[in-house]
Amino acid sequence: KQWYQRRVRGDSLTKRIIVYKAKAKLREIHEKLLRERLGAMEQAEWDRSKREREREEEEEESERLLRFKKDIISTIVAKKMEDDNENTGQFSPAPIQANQLEQGELIVDELEDMKALEDQRRTVFSTESKRRRMLTSTVQPTFDRTALSEEDMFKMESERYMGPDEERFNGEVVLEAAPKQ
Image (tube, rainbow, N blue to C red; front, side, top):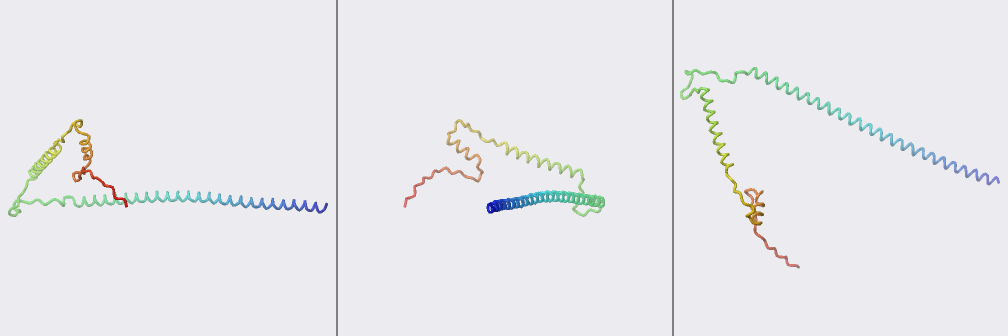
């Protein structure tokens, strides 16, 4: 009886040890899973904060670039205004008196010069408009499509999208079967 009781107690002790080991293993697995999840959450938070930092840096960079462009533009405009103010009237020729002219030079009246220029512009414009009218007035012959044969209609349609440097090949080629070896 004692042997049996020791044996039963030994078996229950073995079972308790197995249960204890299983629980310990489950705790380890649970801790490992928690560490992995915590690591994943920390990584996600780090990625999110990194994207936010990058976005903020990009916004700051674009704002800085915009301010830089505005500064450059304002500097250029100010410089241009300053140059315009300094150079006002410096590019106009000094008036010449008739006694200062060399032989063969003419004095042209400004109004007469403008009138001659306008006449030349009108002449160029009228010849150009006449040329355009002539180009557009060349009437393309229209065909009665009902009077055309199917083959003629096929030819017209195939030539429709061809350029002037393209050519249509009509000839049929008879292919002979290659001799079998």
